[in-house]
Length: 179
Image 1 (cartoon, rainbow, N blue to C red):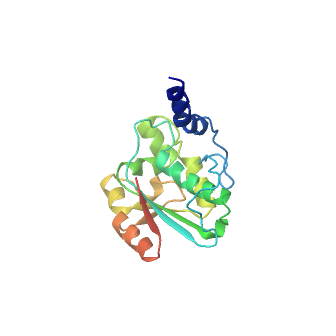
Image 2: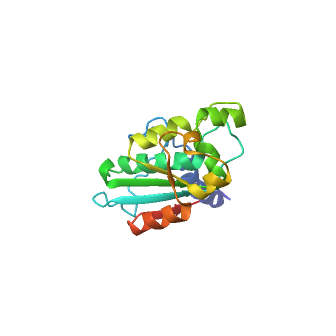
Image 3: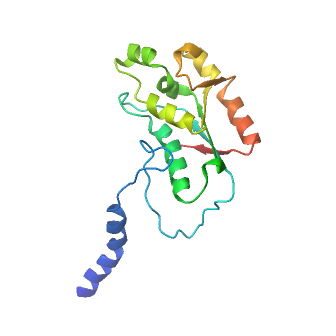
């Protein structure tokens, strides 16, 4: 019986240790994208290489009073790599936004008309843009959802389509991250 208890302790100890870790504020975007420390990972981060990522963001979540977590993932990407020693100039990030996620990048007036609150994504979108993140809205989605350039947050670029932006960015060696 004692051996069984000791075995359970050794099996469960790593889960307990990792579940007790606290998230930490990021170095690049401090208000968003909290990360966790990963001590001595086996798969090493190559800090001298460009890390070019394009996030395919095609959905929103039910609670319109909260930041779209897929946008927050871009902040987390920047923060965790900066923490690992990758210089900001080596981090190239783009978000290609389409589908229902288009509602999350409209200006406060349009957001308020739909949800009766200011757009909670606006501060994060602004912070991402200030750090060089490209924020690209699918023009096809915009037309389908009746979203004009004037309806979007000022940091948003409109492309012919999400497909066009995704292909062009991948042709520029951005790696697709899709959730």
